[in-house]
Image (tube, rainbow, N blue to C red; front, side, top):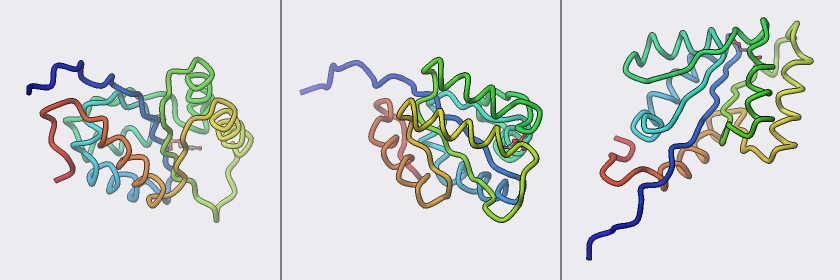
Length: 142
Ligand SMILES: O=C(CO)COP(=O)(O)O
C-alpha cells in the first residue's frame, strides 16, 4: 500500500566550527550532504563561507562571524526555538577572545534541549538520526 503520510518537516541545523576545525566541518557536511540538503542550514559567517566554497549547491544562511556576534545570533535563534540541532566543532586547545559567547551558546542549547555535537563522532549520531527523517524519495548517504 502506498505511503500517504505527509513528508517529515524540514528541520533547521546550526553549523559552526572554530578555525582549526573548519576542515573537519567541511568534511562532515560532505559525508552527510544528502541527509543535510533537504533541511535548512544556518552557519556563522566564516564557517558558512568555507562550507559554501566546498559545497556551493547547499543553501546556507550565513550569520555574522562568531567573534563578531555570530555565536550570539545563533543563541538568539535557539531562544526563538528555530534551531533543531547544533553542530559546533569547538577547538578545545585554543583560547578564544569570545569564549563567553561560546559558553552562552552552549548554555542556551542545554537550556532549550537542543541536541549539540561538539565533535564529528557525535555529529554523526545527529546526522544518522536526521537520516531517518528524510523526505520520501531523498537519497541516503552515498
Ligand atoms: O568563532 C566561531 C564560533 O565560536 C565561529 O565563527 P566563524 O564561523 O565566523 O569562524
